[in-house]
Amino acid sequence: MKILEKEINLTIPDERYFRRLGYPTSYDPPMHVEELMDWSEIWFKENANPWVGFIELDVTIQNEQLFFNGLLIDSPKLLKRYKKYSVKKAILIASTAGDLADAKSKELWADDITDQSFFLDAYTASFAEALIAHAAQTIKEWAFKKGFQTLSRYSPGYPGWPLQEQQKLMQLAHNQHHNIPIQINESSILSPQKSQLSVIGLYEGDEERVIEPACQNCSLLDCACLKNNL
Image: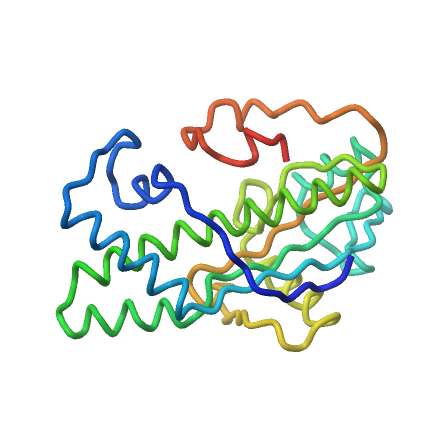
């Protein structure tokens, strides 16, 4: 599985968008809210530049240390998990909602068109969330055809994996693809804002991973990790 770059067309459920807007999932929006939601969706679909890439990684564990493509990964959490499931392969997901929506939202805010700015920003965040979930599901389906099961996707900044490790994931990504539309600064913050680097471990066998207690207690009830056991 190598970097994929193609047109991305996702439908964002209202419930996911409502949560980003701070509304309950059962919210019945008035007309002016519906108009702003529709405008944001249309603008994003016509103008935004989302992108997602998949990069296959070789996973090795030596002397109680974890390596991706020979690069040392400092994550006791991943080391324990990947050792338990004898993970030999992983997929690095690089995803972003793109920089054009961020720029438009900032432009609207600067022009004091705050409602449109807020709704576009919320839609962009919803899309970014749906994009990574879609990518994880794509990997799960691909892995199943190859005889693998998938572990939960995990990112630097999650418990047990320092945020600074994003520098290493970016290095691994750029080693295979030089035109990834994601940048990283000295503080390990990604740009555009709504970008993410995640890793999904693959393991052989028919037994699916039991969902971890941390996932069962998570307040994000519509999370793809919980629904699809990714």
